[in-house]
Image 1: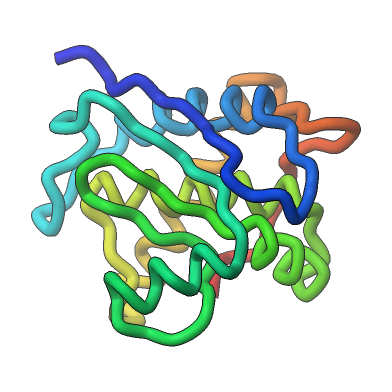
Image 2: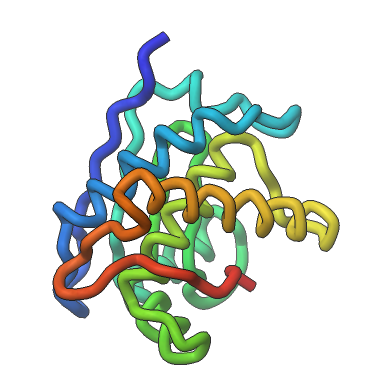
Length: 165
């Protein structure tokens, strides 16, 4: 089966982002994620024909969070098993400041996190979260290694990132 087609869509106006660079990272990360064996908890990326990464505002993310997970407020990333990864750009900006990353690096991290969920990884308990964090670090590193360690995003690069937590 052919790998899923991946597209990145900007549905927010809070800040400017380089869709081309995020698209490049998402494509590289998808290729690397497909090399990771899926877990028993998910169908895996092989079952998806189209993958969409949708950049949204905190307001939209809070709506999704409440509607589908029954939790208040925005979160960083929500993944739907049919191939949608919703990413909050405003949360990425806030977390970038908090963890000393660039916004671009946070966005790359969230894309990798969503891909791992689609591959069947989970982070609902501490053991699974630790396993996912290790896989996430390997995935981001591998995706960047494909382009000599850096995926250009605007004037910056996706580099080392703090774990989602």
